[in-house]
Length: 278
Image (cartoon, rainbow, N blue to C red; front, side, top):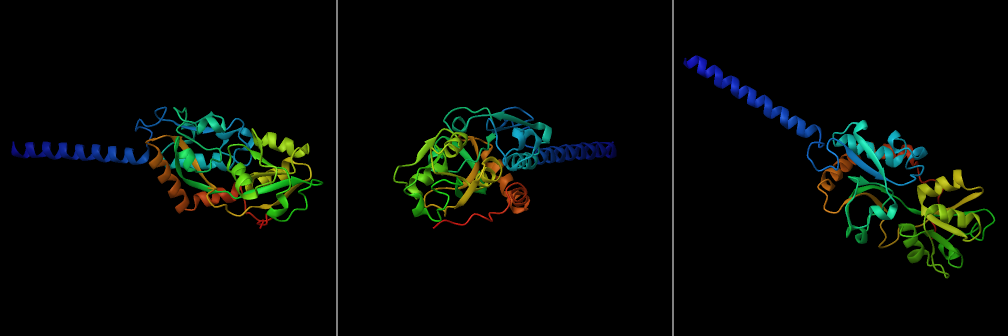
């Protein structure tokens, strides 16, 4: 009887140990069961409508092609999700950083991390530091400009509510004031129609616009880092989200192991060809 009882206790102990180990491994493998996600077993990612190259290729984030699409899938994998468990939703730029409930777990649309925005939403750690750049078209008054002083007497625009617009206001300080537009598309139209002389966008967008979108596009140069203006991009999350910490951890691990640098190199390339304007 004693031997039988001992065998039973050993068997029960072994079963409990196996169960505990399985539970621990399951918790490490995936965060999908924590209940902190909008949809159980899925991770919901927000992006723009439309989402632009080089951040998303052909406006299809589900392909994983493009800088931000690739980063989103890399983070999802770190969190234990398969590619098929990533759900994409579309939001406007402003709606994602406004106060209130969200329909995404995180959103990435080249959001610069600022204290003002932190009042309404959470941010992850930075996944990219983007310098600002000035572009124009051949034949414009800005085409021969080589320094910031040369821009002050010109009409310089940017999309409102962006870091680019803040840089125009606070760093270039054009005499006529910063020319505001609802979107980069509107600003580009103003540039090509001669309504403005130059346009400020982040450097990756500047490379794309001058190389692929604009006829006779000219990249004048990049602007030096502006005091008090953050060029660090972060994921936007709902205010006080329980996912802010694990998503930040996932991003930091991607930085540490070189994955994030590889994604940046693949989709954004080097900054060569954009002199720093003094």
